[in-house]
Image (cartoon, rainbow, N blue to C red; front, side, top):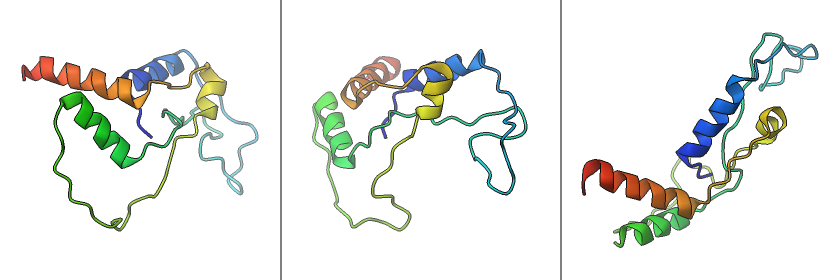
Length: 119
């Protein structure tokens, strides 16, 4: 999952006005990890779309106008073949699903980086 920083900020800001209440159905025998009998919630703030590593690298190469020197290795211990954020609880609570495409987010990041570091 590639999640652009502006989408994360938007998700956090939207949750600020939604004070969680205790979940009366929460049970220690069958706990819901996203809620509690205490007033808090945990939300995934992600783009809800897996992104292959080579696609990320290709996008960076395109934005930088340079080819990366790649050393291909087998999957390493602890690597996860695929993952993505389930943002249904966030969408249900605050009506927001991050949606910035990886190409847009990486391009914005590269532009910011070049300006900030004057490179």
